[in-house]
Length: 212
Image 1 (cartoon, rainbow, N blue to C red):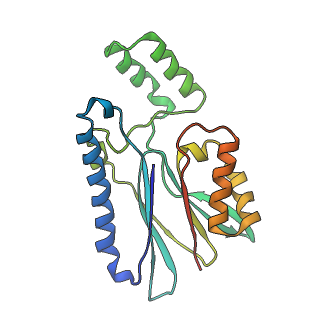
Image 2 (image 1 turned 45 degrees about the vertical axis):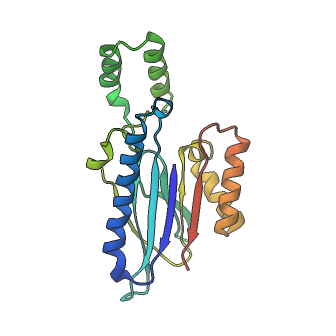
């Protein structure tokens, strides 16, 4: 997965930056698709969560706007009734349980081995749903632009995490780690260390920023 952060000096620059952000995602998607012509890279792909934190001069508050493709996630930790609460800002681009018959039928039509079909059934039964789209999925991102926006309060922390992290570290533990650290850099390091300690074998990536 990939994570990008940008802080703008003026809200007036936001529309231009936002479009450039999406163009960068589409460009990466196209480059990966092209790279698949090399047989050694035929299975290449990635997810992406990318966000911009920008100021509103009229109110003095900051906003987060971003783009998400796949199952990396953007989160916000903010205060609710005096207690820190975590909100997932992005939505996972994954197949849902009700899609299982369609996916199984597609594998059968494609003549895939029975072991692969059974593996998919087991994954979905455990709540591990396969990706619906990712960068490199033959241009599939073009019609799935996921717009994300949140108005931030002073003291909020926003962070992105790949599935190798969030599948290993439950959200209540994320909040607990933030309560112990209150430092974006230390928070990210401890999240990654926790995922590694849990034996996560997928990509473990994270980036965080605290609004002031």
